[in-house]
Each structure stands twice: as structure tokens, then as C-alpha cells.
Length: 334
Image 1: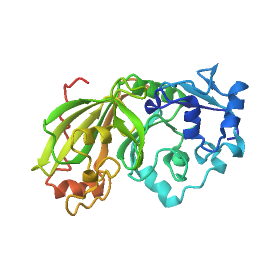
Image 2: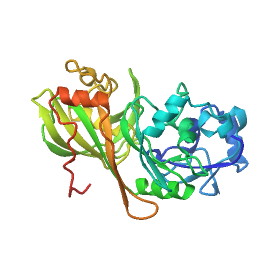
Image 3: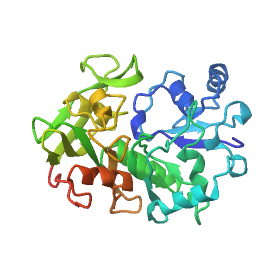
Image 4: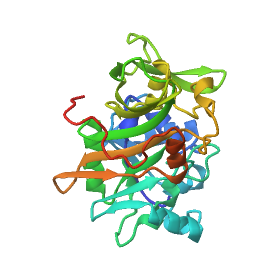
């Protein structure tokens, strides 16, 4: 990174320690060097000096000084130094744009593409954002995230001001994100609210989030609304999911918690991993269907992403209508 950069914390980074934030975004930056940058005031949060153990909140600005080759990753290098995006991949990403104006870009993120990098993740969207600059002077900025294996709507800011306003909207929960999923089995109640705190735990399958007592020191409140749009007997159900909070793997953990894991989810359930017959899509059956977010220029931006081809085939296999337009949450308050 050649110069100073200011980054905004995302909606899923509430209570994340500052040193862990740097580990997530700049995995090559050593702990010792980060401590020196903090001691000398080169790293600042909202313009103020900070300690490594500072707990962050969504929408905060973090001053990142020049890190050089010792602490940089592909996402933050100048355009000339970033790993080139193959022409075919760049064209595919541009064709995934669902909405573009002077302030905001919304794309239909494909499943399998990580939003940000990390150890063992050299290919990720953040390193490819130059291809979505179009006529702007700045490259787009991420303001929220989707899991690597989740497809669907993802919002990008085209200016620093838009990034701050959008990040604040996610933090204040003035957005509405609706996901579609096929789950194994069917919920006992057709509609409901899942209010179960989550925390990260290490297990046989590595790190994952689990439901914990609200008094647990690592607990973070998580709330999901769900509605059953259709069922295939007791074998599978099509759910609309509204994550009122934005915790890591929240929908996957909550669906498993009520006994209906998302189809294709090997991390949270053996039952979810089962294909339930010759399902064409051998992956997580979770799609970010739509988003409503306050537009930085005023009004509300509403964008919908159609089901990708592989999920359409799965929807049809179970007798579900992939072209359905309603999500059944009209008039429901979180």
C-alpha cells in the first residue's frame, strides 16, 4: 500500500478487536509491527489513537498507514500492483451489476467468490473491485459482506461519503435483507422469530458459530425472522429469511438450531449436507434475494437478484416456483 488509506468497519464487525480487524484485512502484518504503528499513532480510529484491544463498532473509520510489502494484501495495493483480473472474469463481474448510479453499485455476487481475502484466499472480490470503477475516480468500497458460498445482492459504495452513510445504515439496522433458502425438513411453525445468541467455538469441523446462553462472555445477540414459502412434504422447505442482526453464519446456525439445516451446509449439519436426491446444485442453497437500503442521495434503494441457474434447477426439483416475486414479510416489524 503506497499511501494512507481510510477504511470503514462493516456491519458484521461489531465488537471485533482492532488487532483482529488488522489480522482479518492484512494477514501479513505482524503483531509486533502493528503494535509499533499503534504506539506511534499511525493507526487511528475515528481520528483518535487506539489500543490493540479496542472493540470496534460498524461504521467507524480506521486510518491505515502505508504498510509496504511486509503488511499488504492484493485488495489494498495500488491498481498497477494488484493481481490482474482475467478479461473473461472481469467481464463476468461487470455483467453481474444489478444497479449502478453515481453513489452505489449493487452486484449479484456468484457463489464461490469470497468477498475479502485472508490466509489461503488469494482470489476474492475486494482485489477485483478495480474492474467496477467504471467512470468514477475512486474504486468501489465494500460496506457489507456475504459468505463465500452465498450468492446474491451485495452493495458497494462508489465514494467515501456513500460508504460512511451506507455503513451507518447497516449499523442502525435501517436496511432490510431477504434471503431465500431450501432447508432439510420443514419448520414446526410455518412462520417464526429465532432469537438466539451466537458465539464462535472451535470444534471438529474447525471454527463455527453456535447458540450459547445470552450471559456467555462471547455471546452476541442474533435475531432472524423466517417464513415458509413452500414445502415438499416433510422432506424440504423453501424459507424466506430476514436477518434482523448481521452475525457471521447467522442464518446457517439459526436454521440448524430449529432442526432445518440449509441444504448443502456441511459445516452446520450432516443432514444439511445430504443432497436429498439428485439436486443439481451441490452447494449451499442460500441466496441473498433482495435488499432495501437508504440511498446516500435520499430515498430508498430496492434491488432484487434472480436465482442463479444451478439453484433454479434445485427449486424446480422440489416443485418450488423460482420466479415467485413475493417474500411474505410485508408489514412485519423486526
